Image 1 (cartoon, rainbow, N blue to C red):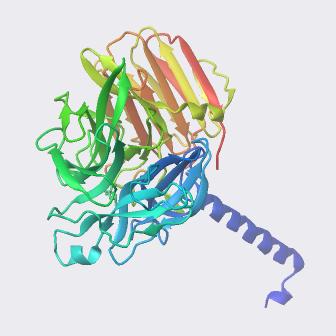
Image 2: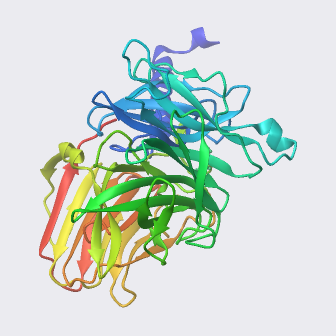
Image 3: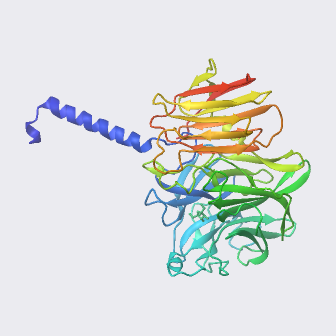
Length: 492
Ligand code: FRU
C-alpha cells in the first residue's frame, strides 16, 4: 500500500511522525525540574547515604529502577563536587536474600574501625535497613533489620558484609532508617534509629557490634504517624553546642501527610535530652520529607529532603520519572526569645546558578524557567506572589498578617485531580517577631521553596501547571524595600 502513496503524502506522514515523537518526549519530560535533582527515569524517594569524601558529595537514594511507582528498593547513586551539578552513577545496592534496601546512611571510616579498609584505603560504609517482604507477608514483626556494606573505590562498587544483619530486630514492626555518625568524646559510632513511635540510640566501636543506649520520643513531639528517617547532629551557636534531632513522620505533618519535625537538646553519647516541649517542623510545606544531612562535612551541616509527600507521591503527573529532591540547604541555629530554632538556607554553592536579573515593572516580571526572588521589607504586611500561566493556572505564595502565617496556595495550580488533597492551601506560622522581613523564593518549573525570616520558617511545595508558569506578580499592602528576581541556570 505504502509504495503507492504520493511522495508529498509520505513526507507529510514522516513529518507528522517526527513531530509526534518530539511531542511525546516533551510530554515525557514535562515538569522535569531545571535545577533540582531527579533520577533520569523511574521511581525515587528518600535521599540516602549522603557522605562527603575525597572532595565528592555522594548522594544515594531510594530507587526502583523498573517502574515509576514505589517497588523493591535499591540505592540509586549520584555524585557532585559542587552540590549543584550531579553525575548519575550505576545503582549502588540491589535487593538480596535479606530483603529490599531501605533508607540509611553512609560514613567514611577514616580510622578503619570496621577493618574493611585495605592498603590504607579508607572504606566507605553504608548502614541501611533490610526489609524482608517474605517476613512481612508471613505476618512476622521482625522483618526490618540493619545491615552494612563497604566500598573501597569511593562508592563505585559495594560489598555487603557477609555477617549481615548487624542489628537484629527485637520485635518492633517499624525498625529502620539508621543514621550513623562518629561521636568523638565517647569514641564510638552512634546509630540513631526510628523504632515505631520513638528513636532508639545504639553505639558501636566498629559498625558491626551494636549496643542499645537509650530511647527518646515516647509521648514527646508529634505522633500522628510512624517515625522515620531520623538524624542527630550538633550545631555550634554562639560558642555553644546544641544537638538537633530530626524525625520524619508519616502521616501527621502540620499540613497533612508526611513532614519532618525537629528537637533541640543535648546528647552525651548515651542519651538525648530535649530543650524544648513544643513541636517544630523543619519545613511546613507539603513537600519536604525524609531529609537528613551529609556526613563528613565537619561542623557544616547540609540538608536535603525528598520533595514529595506519601499522600500522593505515587500519583504525581510525571511520566518518565517520579520525584525530585529539595535544593541543598545549610542548617544553623537562631535564637528567638529564649528558644533555638533551626534556620535553613539555600547552600551558598547555589549562587553559581545565578544569571542576570529579570526586569521588574509594577511589581511584575516574566519567568523563563528557574528563578530566585528576594524581597525585603521594613514593615511586614500582607503580601502575595503569584506564579501563573495564560491558562489562569496559578500558585500563590504569601503572608497573612492577621493569621500571622505564610502560605502556599496551589488550589488552582494546574493538574491537581490526581489526588483529592493536592489542591491545597498550606500554612506555616511565622516565628520571627521583627517588623522587618526577608523572603527568598526558589522557583522551578514544578516547585517553589520559600525561606522566610532568614530561614526559620520554610515551606516547600510542588505543582504541575498544564503549561509552565510565565508570569510573576507581587501584591503587597506595604511598599517593599527590595525586589530582586534573578534567572537561575539549568542543570539538566
Ligand atoms: C520514608 C520511608 C523509610 C523507608 C523508605 C522505604 O519515606 O518510608 O522509612 O526506609 O521510605 O522506601
